[in-house]
Image (cartoon, rainbow, N blue to C red; front, side, top):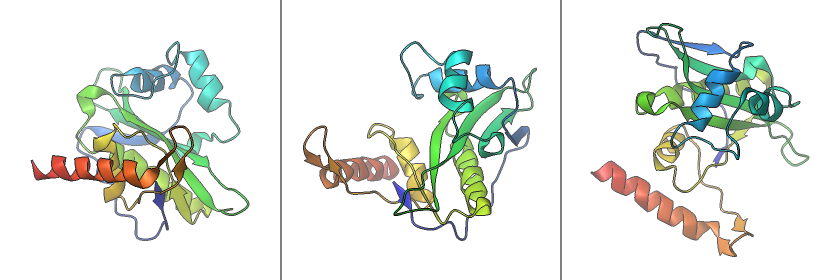
Length: 185
């Protein structure tokens, strides 16, 4: 999905008792728990501290100021419950493109706007570093996330799907119909 510009981003609305902050050393366990949760972004073997460091923290695309977490300040340890990360997706054709990466929330905290909050924080950080547009990748089954991305100004990208020989227009048509059906209920 593509957000063709980073202008006019809405304000971030955080409910009372929750804090939006950037990455701190020691967040590996909480971030892994968010990604390992049901409906999260799974990996073979799970998101151990080692895997989080290898696949996120130790990569050149990662900066602590580009990883945002929502923390439940009412929990005893003020645990992170949602996250999103800013990568650089720049190419020769798009030198100022940002990449919204690894958006997720613990199941008990979904549906409260935390995915929107961390996504907006990433988009604002991209704009601050000089990015002009943003992209993301998601799976067809992540309908609530896609609805959120659409509301944030992302639009489908209609590229051929080499794996299955299908055109993304067909896939996006089905996804958008499902998004509309959920809204209508």
